[in-house]
Length: 281
Image (cartoon, rainbow, N blue to C red):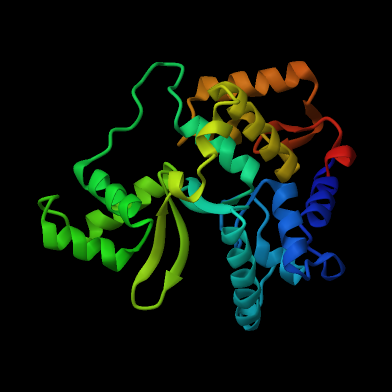
């Protein structure tokens, strides 16, 4: 694969031509399912397709299109949340990533499993415990409701708006809570993950941590068309150890699921690509 081939493959897969643009909520559903992971709008340094670009059919999203995009994406999320199909969470690059139900299950498995170095799972602070208990008790809660509860009860001494936002972000990135909407004047609407998706634990038990990680890495390579071992380690450093990423890549190479492309060099390194691009694209 040459660099020109890579650009052409991404253009087609990521719908970066007007004639390939997504036009309905159903097409957005199919796109997210196929990609596994994407972003709502393009982000610098984030090598994933974006819904905004796929809806416009070009790399550059015109400012005048934002109103139309907002309306379409609102319809998409309304359906996604009602049917429990997709979520958005900052699991990579501290950036909200749109995940298919399958990817959500796999990320949940990895984040809730013990690493190979036997290091304990991240400790939950008192403020984080208070926040998630309040959300779970009320089924859903806005940021304003959570802030007022914490302030009135003073159960987490020293809590500030900044520390509350950090607690929400941490719980969200660890998939303990899910962002399910926004209410004007109230802020983001949050729901406990185990309340929003009651079968997530059962689905997650089907995979070991390493099996789930391998499937995530494979899907990332398929979605991005080409990447490198170094980039994969940087991308997933918040969810896995470098040696776990190496093991996943090596297993995929041995299985013949991915291969090293001798032609394509990215950042001075030979690229990793899916073994059968046409079958997987």
